[in-house]
Length: 92
Image 1 (cartoon, helix red, strand yellow):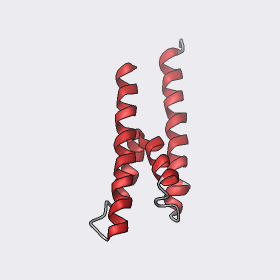
Image 2 (spheres, rainbow, N blue to C red):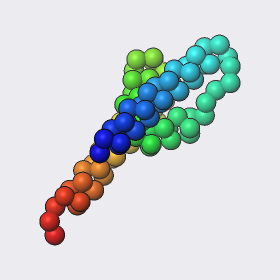
Image 3 (cartoon, rainbow, N blue to C red):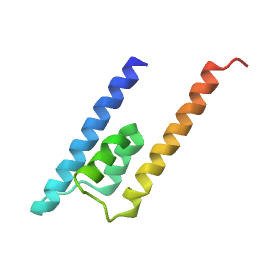
């Protein structure tokens, strides 16, 4: 469990940094990170970092896939994790 929490911390810091880098590149007209890659970071449990990047950096706020999709992915992952945790800890 401790390893997973460390993973969550690292992936969310990396996701936030990636959203920040993409915002910086957008402002200066540089090379961009694909939306697909940004969303895969969310699927890899980087949703908190993504939301902080979306709201805090005001990045991708006009894209429904990010404003609605990121929270939807996070909710789905949370529910799935709870189902798996329940199945592991409950007695059959």
